[in-house]
Length: 217
Image (cartoon, helix red, strand yellow):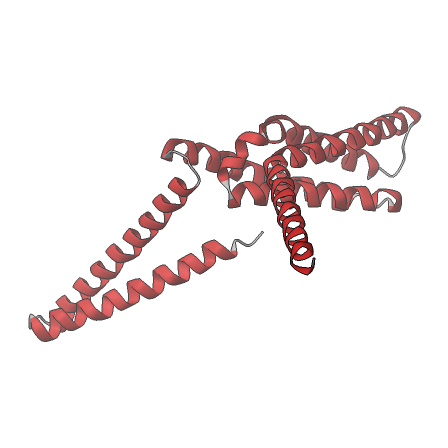
């Protein structure tokens, strides 16, 4: 899961830090008549300060824009880091199951889980609308899927194992629906906003039509 925004931000920080290094070196060497070695040290220090400062400013603006405190953001970040590891385990387990009839379901689970994670990473405040996913459903999915993958990989299966696999498949279907509901809950405000904007647009169109009729009367 590559975060293009974070990568772009790193590039911007690096460019600004490099420019700060060049300016600092020129000022130290030419204007202040320092030695080449000292000018280089000052340049490295200046570049490092600018890199850290830009990163801190970007971080602070991002946290404020999402209406969070630093403590909340740190807490959500910790949960996202744990969730990323769990999602990787879930994906490995699902991909190891070779049943053709489960391929579509497994792909749907992975897509839904990743969508919840990416939405939260993009807008951390959404974490609070998906707490059921992060605290319960994701853990259950990982645990059941890993056990299912292990049992299904056995060369011979007793009736007890086959019954367990069948029960697990049924439970996973239920969990898939729960995770989809988690995503719907997370996007609930967006859907309401969209409906509101559609209603506003319809009313605007209707008013324009009425005005056009009046003009042609």
